[in-house]
Image 1 (tube, rainbow, N blue to C red):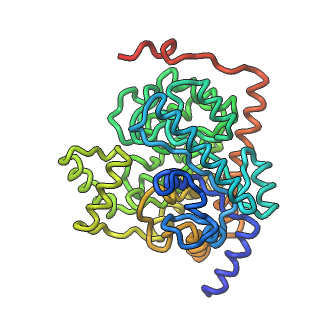
Image 2: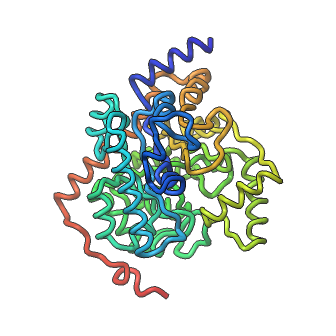
Image 3: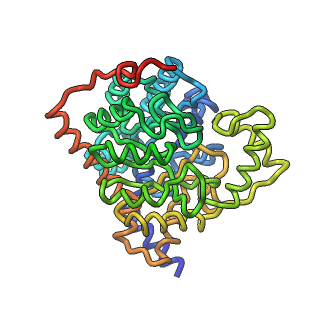
Length: 397
């Protein structure tokens, strides 16, 4: 019965709370409140965001990778500065709500936060433009607590192709492979969400540690370039990596994907690129008023979670909702309180408690720990890379 399933899920989440791979609340805080956490008081329920502390608790979220995203319309020093402001905002958020949040940079720190009843707060940088092709900048982000780097966002970077841009390199450049290896040495997770399929394959050929997709779903279920092809999912067991299924409607619902393709054509006619995060998000929000989009549903997300489990194995699937990174989420998963409904649907489909616990946080904790252990081994054999993009890839055209 539903009540029995609900009780089972509540008990499960007490033992295995959700460790979600991607939440864009910091950028929402910049846009809505200029990073003023008194104005955007997370302790207050019913905020216009997808995320606040009461709903995190209701959703069974015990650990969150906060995205320190900046749009690719910012480049060079401007991107680095804005990323540092995002990192600062997360530190300020954790300090402001210290009774409920705890900064975490290691598996042990996540587990200590969970034991103290606080939400472990990790950081992930979304897009290689945030390092401005500088390994020194990469290292400084790591020193400030950033524990994954998504190699691209919607646009290519000079050393890696994006999923939603025209291919230039056919994957990673020589410097791009050096970025991956330096991340391995540091203990920073290589995040392959947003990158092209060829970049995924090159990264898996290069990496010496498990990779993750912080917020991507299955391309076989919904044919969107942001999703992961089966041949890549099949490689995750050999790598030890993780696909954290996202809830973004156009990535999980074929019907919403078709609506978005039409919207992208309409935007292009007005000179707006679908890869321009800020402009295209505003365009689609306005377009929905005259061209209502179909709704994605919780069942769409279930289909992706089950497909990743089927292809990659239950040890290689997690959750990365992308809350506050899009304006609309699937029915049943409208905000961060929705995770128990997803878990209940999976339980009703025969998922065991062990499998659900692996999905919620067990797999993510394993990857975090394995990346840390591999970094310890690598740091004993090589020092920081002094490679420069101009030396490895040549002067830009």
